[in-house]
Length: 168
Image (cartoon, rainbow, N blue to C red):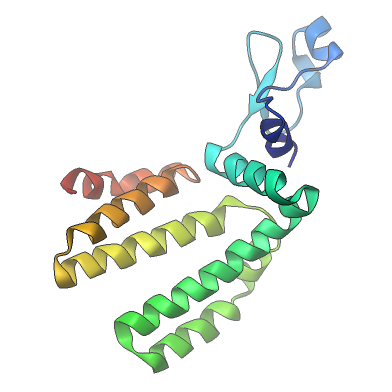
């Protein structure tokens, strides 16, 4: 939203004359944190702001509306392709039906939220990890590490997989 637009325009902080006159106080927007310089910065993980800023730069304000559904569709495609690759076509179809009919995924995917992006990175990371254990290709453990590290940009709970990154 606003933090993505500010980042796309080269401004990370936010200020107004009331914040400067009264040193923050009640004039700090919601989901922002005040600094000692009478400005405020986004109170969220940096990944969601970066994705929003990139979509804002590429498409404009419409990009902020469409990036959530696009990531949801990417999650649907990734889950079906991964399931088909690992287990065959019938489990892939069942996975696709179960994921597409899940109301929580559709509800979260209607807007730009970090849940589905985090899930997409985690699913891709686990897929690369499984492929590494199946074939022992070094590139799969590298990709798994990249996806797990990328998920930390969207949620701090992704740090649980830090030992996997140390192994690689």
